[in-house]
Length: 108
Image 1 (cartoon, rainbow, N blue to C red):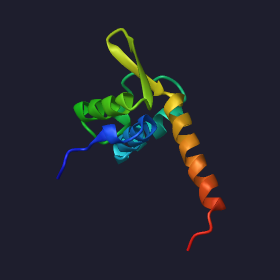
Image 2 (image 1 turned 30 degrees about the vertical axis):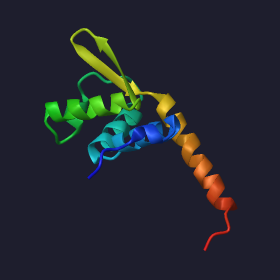
Image 3 (image 1 turned 60 degrees about the vertical axis):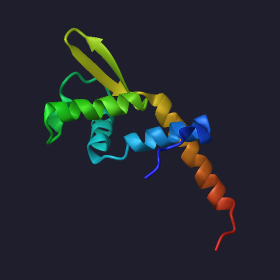
């Protein structure tokens, strides 16, 4: 298997791929859904919501944060997480464009 050659793709294509990859695990989807449900910054409660060990949840949070899907602010000894709207605006624009384009296409 060859190495991914991200330099051959646009910055936007790489950005969408990074976001999509971060959303490619059900635990990360569950974290996003939980953050949307509580609609506030969460410090530590996420571990209680998932059937996963704390280090595993931390790794998923790190992946979501690196992809720009969540924000994390340090408050005392804890990191508080909330949704980062910017990445979701990018996804919304991307998928809205796909939907609009497919509606116009005359395909088999």
